[in-house]
Image (cartoon, rainbow, N blue to C red; front, side, top):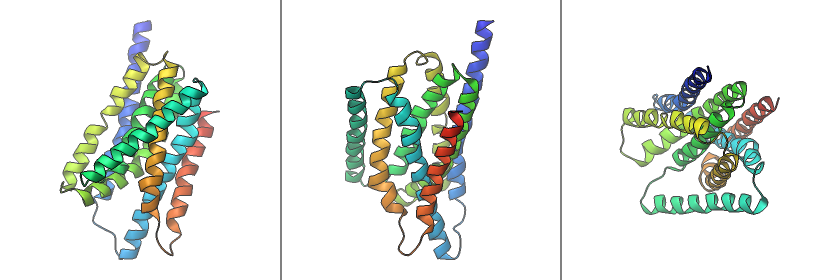
Length: 244
């Protein structure tokens, strides 16, 4: 009986995390659609989606990763994990710049997705309803992040659109792997999960202020800042729903 329940729980986790990850290639496929005319509308939409993704990432940091990460760790460990994330992503950013690559949105997307999928697996072992809701929130975050990452990679590499979408589809498989690890290996390792989430939060915060926020601004346009507000509001609603 217990084994049957575990198998059923694992199947649900695999499906939920795959669904959440599938939002990345879906967002990329939307971004590959022929550009919108007139040009000002294309620019406004692009910057607004960048800002929305930044707002969603900021919400993930402020409302999910940091609160969950600080719940089980002492202050010195919190400081060490968070600072390590920021410093590590600074080094990654410098390496990407030195090699002529621009993949900040992609790095941020994966850094957000993998820890949250781990948390989903760990959460599902306690509350299946909480796991389902968290999967929906992750999917909503991944959609604009997939859109932005596609545009970023399309501009900075020679990859064809279909190849980029295919890469994102393969990345979606990381979700079920992380969810299963969280369910079987980390459901009792609350401190380790917290440390991973804080490390990711530090890295994401660095990327938001280094790359995403500067890209979202347009002179004499007010839509992109509202996109950031809408993205954060999405995370706030999700956090309130998770907390009851």
